[in-house]
Structures are given as C-alpha cells and as structure tokens.
Image 1 (cartoon, rainbow over the protein chains, first blue to last red):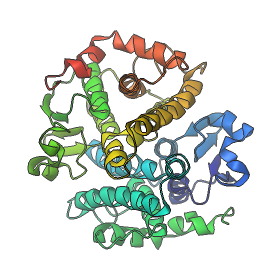
Image 2: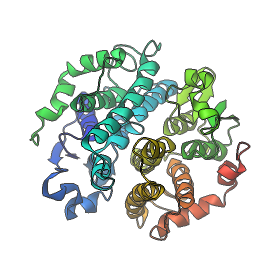
Image 3: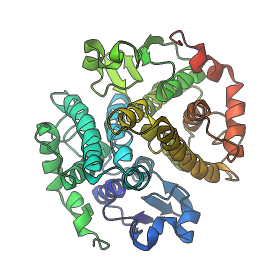
Length: 214
Length: 214
C-alpha cells in the first residue's frame, strides 16, 4: 500500500492518522505542493490523480483519491480498531462531523483557494488571513456546539476511542493554529484534540514528524 | 422523516434525489436561504443545525446534517435499491467521486462564499462569476477524466444504476448551467446526467419542481 502525501496537507494528515491508528503499514510518497511549481501537476502524478490533490492511496491496482473515501476504505478492508461506530446512527454522526470539516471548512481554506485569492483577485495578506480565520471560526463554532454536551461525545468526538471525526479534527486545529486562529471559544474540541495529540498514532502522523517536512 | 431543504440548494437536491430513488417518504420543510435575512439563521433552525446549512434530516430523534452522511444513513437504514456498491472498492470509488464534488467543487462556490467575495472583499460580479466557473471547470475536468473510459463507469457514474455519485453530479451540473459554465468539455458527465434527468426520481427532485421554488 502506498500513500501519496504532503507533510502539511491537512487531508493527507487525516489519512496518516487513520493508517497509524489501525496499524496499517504504508509506503509514504511525498508530493511537494510548492516545489517545482507544484509536484502535484507533474506528469506522473497527474496521470494518477487529475484532481492534483493529496492524499492518494494506491492499493493493489486501486487508485483512490479523497481522504474520507480512503479512511472508510481502510476501515472496511482492515476491520481491526474500527474508525466508524457499529451502529448506523453513530456512523452517520461521525460522517457528519467529519464532513463538517472536510467539506465545509478545509476546502475553502485550501492552498489553491488562498493562492487564487492572492494571485487572481489580488487580495492583501491581511484579507487572506481574515478569510482563513472567518471560515475556520464559522465551522468550529458550529462543531463545538454539536460536540459539547452531546450524549455521544466521550473522551473523543464520538465515544471513548478515536474515530474518523478525530482524524479530521486534529489536522484542522493544527492548521488553525498555524494561521493564529483563536481556539479559546472551542474548549470541547481543543480538549479532545489534546487527548488525541498524546497518542502515538497522532504524534507519528503530525507534519513535523514527516520525512518530507521542510 | 423530515428533510429541511431549499429548492436551489445543490446539497439538498442530492438528498431529494436519494430519497426518491429509494422510494422513502419524507416531509420536506423549506428553509429559504435568502428570505428574512436567511431563514437558516432563525432561532428554530439554529437550534437544530448550528452550521446554518441545508439539508438537515430528522428521523425519530436523530438530527443529521451533511448531505453525504444523510445519503449513507438512508442507504444503510433502507437497503432496498442501494446507492453504494456491494464491494469495498466500488464503495470507495463512489465515495471518492461524490466527495470530488461535495468537498472540492461545491463548498468553494456555495452561496455564503460568493456572498463573502462580494460583501467583504468587494469583488465585481464578473470576478465572482469567474471564480465560480474556475472551480467548476477545475473540478469537472478532473471528474471527466476519472469517469471517462473507466471500466467501472456504466450508464451512470458507477455501473448501470444510479449511485450516490449521480446524486451529486446532477445538482452540480444543474448549478453550473445556471452560472453559464461551458459543459462541452465533459461529454461523459453530461451524457450520464442526461440519463439521470430522464428518470422520475431525478425529475421530482429538481429545483423547479419543489413547492418552495420561487
């Protein structure tokens, strides 16, 4: 199994956590999103993933983009230490929490979007930072309300073991800190993230512990 | 079962298609995203969904946001006429195609993002349209390449019956037409969409056939 990854990619970070939590060995192949005009646009990677995004999983002929699709695939094919709950309602909740990040926060603040804002619309660095923080705050505020005090929330986003939702939460908060977002309004989310970040699977997956870290 | 919906919401349209394809009866509750300063911000809806987005499903105490989470929940709880393939690789492919739209095209072109571009960044209507078309073209170009000629592609995105991927594709192309995007470069996607749009489940779910259509 091979995972095309970039140390700072929030979406690749999610999958690295999932691999580690499940104890799946995978070869990590770095795709540097900034070097060489963006290695994701190179001929070899373009042939594998016309979306030019990371992560991308290769598994015995399967070529699979999209971090959440990858995590669900890993969970289905390696059932040990499940990242989705056993019940339909639980799975629905974990998917919805994951998608709140993977659909409604991260893509709007992704590298290529920030680049378009600067390069094509000519916004100032301050406006770009405000944009980033706006979507993070909007998304995390809602997520905090959904998780805080919910009966299904435990030590982690759903129950007392990490799920796909935690694989999404930690990279999003990591990124938010990089952009100096104020995380004080989200005590439940940050407490969960702290618990995650103490676990070896999360530590080994973090950007600074990647071979391709700058 | 109740679905909070807005006739023009691409994400709500996905779920309306899924409900119809599976023959599930649901009460449709309109949330007008433009009237009254946005009914999604009203007290009642805010209490249900702090994300202030549609769709939202209510089912016997479950309150579930996020269109893809809803579709998977419907598919798991109503197994007839499945919207996901029976094999892990097939499910992974359908999820990845769905997420290519639901994560990497739609959220960047969503109403609230376009509003921020106009109201906060003061971009011109032309710049806003160019933004819209840029992300649609980037996303659909990749999707066309992933679907065209793939062995798993059939009359629909995956095989010869509609799946969750088709529930995502048709609303995205509908929206793209509204914004005058050129769809000629995507002959495989538009041919699939035409097949879908001839089916009663897709016709009944379309924006112009909703009770809340303007």
